Structures are given as C-alpha cells and as structure tokens.
Image 1 (cartoon, rainbow, N blue to C red):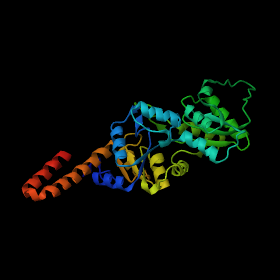
Image 2 (cartoon, rainbow, N blue to C red):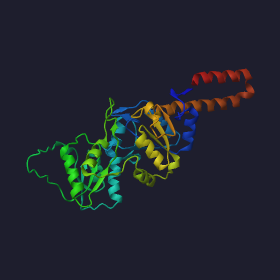
Image 3 (tube, helix red, strand yellow):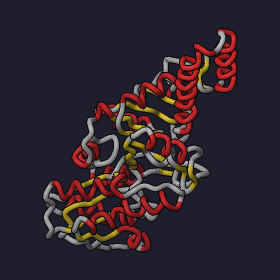
Image 4 (cartoon, helix red, strand yellow):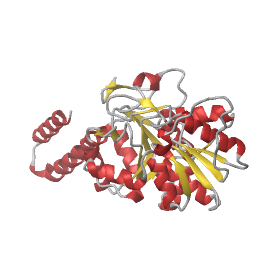
Length: 342
C-alpha cells in the first residue's frame, strides 16, 4: 500500500489522519531552513501556503537553523526577500546560540573571540557586546611556511567559534589552533557539525562540520556544540516562549541534527525529503534515527489537512441537510466529494 506517493511502515508516512492528529497535538512547529524552507536562495514549493495555513490554525512558527552564515537580522531580511514575513524573534540560529552561550556563561568582557566563520557570527557577537575578529577578512590572509617562521597571535583571545566558512583557509586553521592550544582556558565552540548542506539550490556543499573537524583534529580536542542536535538552543527557546516541548513538532531534512534534536528535547518529529535525507537513507537498515513521521515536503501538510477539511465540511452539510435529502442524494454527494479529494 502507498500513501502520499511513499511506502508504508517500517517508516511512518504522513497521512491525512496523521497530519490532523499531529496538528491537533502541538502548539508550535519548529522548522529547519536549508532543505526545508529553501535551497540556497530558492524557496521550496508550497512553503508560503503551509506557513499561512498553520498560522491560521493558531500555530506558533519558529525557525531553527544551524547555518551560521547569517545573523537573525540577516535571516529576517532573507525571509522578506522570498515573500515571507518572519520576525527576528521567530528565528534561532547557531550564530545567535554561540553568542548567547558566551553571555550565559559569563564570558569575560576583557577577552576577545576569534571567529572561523562568516558575518552572521560576527554580528551576533557584537550585538551581545563581545569584541571579536577573524571572519571573512582573514580569508584574504596567506601563510608562507618558510624556515623559522613564527605565527603571532592575540593572547587575549578567550574563545574560538567555528562555523560554516566559505573563506576557510590555512591561516584561520592555524590561528584557531594556536589560540585553543596556547591561550589558557580558551573555549573551543562549534556552531554545529553538519557534514553538508544546501548552500545553493543546485547541489549540496561541505558544511560547518568539515571546518570544525579540521580544527578539532589539529588541537586533538572536541568542541562545545551549541547548534542542533545540542539541547542548548532548545533551553533558550523555551525561556523565550511559554511552550512545552511535548507540544512542539520539529520539522527538518536531516536525521542526525534536526530529528535527533527533536528527539533529544522531547518534541514530535517530522522528516521532509526535500533536502539532505533520501528515502533510501531513511529506510536503510544501518539507520537508527527514526522520525515520528515523514513526507516529501512541508507542502504535503496543506493537501493532507485540506482533505480533512473537505470531509469535515461535507459531514456537516450532509447532517444538516439530511432531513431534506434522500439517501441516494446523500450517497451521491459523498461519492463525488471522495473523487474530488482523491
């Protein structure tokens, strides 16, 4: 049997009944962005309709992304450029999480932060009141490995944050390595460890995890991860909204970050196959991360919920008019409606 173009269990396919049950059981939907809302700068089909429907149903929408290239302000601007109205308060990024982690852990204002990443991290750090440097500017710097060359670094750096960085180079790797290794108590923070991501609509690209792995290998130390699947971001989210995790649904395209994040924090989980994870990967015997439900894309929610809407309204109409209609007429209306829905 096939539902929604997808095979049935062992994986739980999103059906009309499951969609209705899911929506009735949650107050908020947490959406990943890359591969769920968009790919690169291209909006995924049906996203505006899905957001509109869920909001009309009174659901809170929150966007939780591991992509640290932009700040919340920059992401809000991107949403608007794609025709979506999303406020900064509805956006939680790993760049924001990194800044909040330092703030909540009383990072000394006398210390500096070195950034292996892009403008999103730098902007969030500055908004939080921290002095930082690195980022895209250091992507222009080169190293010549000549005899007796000594690499100078700022000994007041108290934290190194590593995120997605299209300007990643040997200079940055060495700067991060030497700060973490030689500056007493220097924190090593990773925005996330995603191996790949949809940085463009055409294909996947290396994710922040590749940069984190390079630095981690050079210092022989594991980082503090603040993005998904870490629960740190959820802790702050819960403080921002009066919500319970059991009344939330995490919607994402990655098993090892989005779905694991939802499971680790007690949310319901919905995997969409519009991004990184394929159906064969989901159903592979070696996969041990299973969402509550899965479907092709978020747009499926609209079609499936509308099926319920049509049936509910049909039932009300037939019941209301039953005294004035013959049994045959009622059956004809029901049969035609079923043909229309299917």
